Length: 196
Image 1 (cartoon, one colour):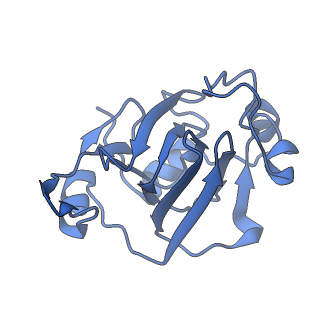
Image 2 (cartoon, helix red, strand yellow):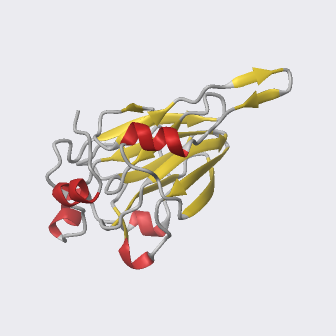
Image 3 (cartoon, helix red, strand yellow):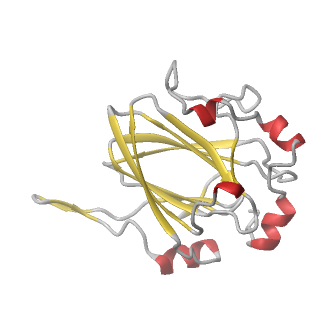
């Protein structure tokens, strides 16, 4: 695992063992994840999302505490995975990082509680699987509009397909004004974050 540009987010590059039969890899190791990030991922839920080309899902996040840490990989096809720093007061507030995930590199991302998550399907069909630290709870789940011009996410599709919920979501500034976004200090107190 190696940190990416937003504190609390990591890229996972597993070792692939391939031969004539195909490939084998450890796509998740709890001991390695805990050692690298400084805290374990307590698995509460595992999700699978199948999307058609051009679908954009997110930017999703949960109230902190308890938040929802995620460990995400692409099991089939290809996606552009996007991590957004929505933590008010963070040194990288409003910044985003895009990481390609696909069924060839088998890379994954880990994002700690308080970060926003979104992805765009790049292949005709794309299946992502992700492990979550807490179960889905609608009353503490929120979304920021993925096409918010203030964020300026460079989505690789001309006409993204959005859910009704994501299309109606507030922009980052509106979500901040409404008090929906997690605070950087709260996230740091809840789960220590290496700011390097």
